Image (cartoon, rainbow, N blue to C red; front, side, top):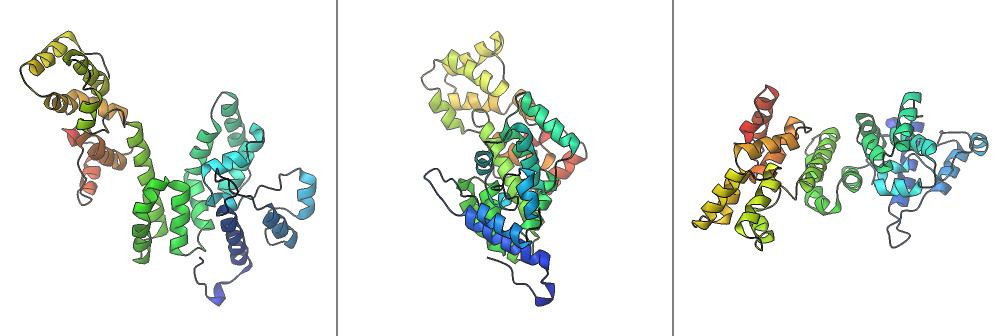
Length: 326
């Protein structure tokens, strides 16, 4: 589970981290009900505080501070978002935000961040969204990498996948991620790749009802429609507007003359207007992510990794995104 360590590298901080990591991993892997509710490690937390190893607060400070002693900031880097939300569901907004900072940034919330996040919650923001935003920040990434530094490669990948990837994607990546670490690639690079991969999958899932579906699936879902309704659905799905009278009449006429629905679909889905719509829908993505999404969702081709850097560089230099699509 842990990386080997030379005797000259052993110090109090390393020992503390390894004890905390071991306790956290044991808790994280313990299923205590059918909903996969992971147990807390208040016993470990208390014993570590009492022994002085944990170092977050002295025991007397814990007793007099009103702190929730079931909260252990070390374990959360090992657990899924839903676990944090469930374990903190009893907290009010102020203390929930405080625990976000303690759990994932391992520091007290600054005054501005605390006030701003509490205000967002009062205005209707979801706790889950605040959690995702903070946990995916650069500062939280640094904490995750520091806390997991004592783990061996396989355990590190297992934790990173459990926290940042959907289960259905993890099984296809795990051996590959462990292998590239063994070949010398840095954990920072592999970790960023894992996060990027999940971001891509989330985006594709959001586009599933639009561009990211196979043409044959669209044809199957709309086979009960007459030609006119079929064309109207095409426009709403891929152009995000109602069909203009001329376009509707032209497409219906093609269908009545024997052009297949699949051909009509393909022509509209890959049109310049559809490309512009797709670029608008994905305008918030960075260039590297856009290139991957463009191939998966719009072009429906497998992107050759050798070509991706050149595409990204061209976009970085100002090439219009539409040129990747058309």
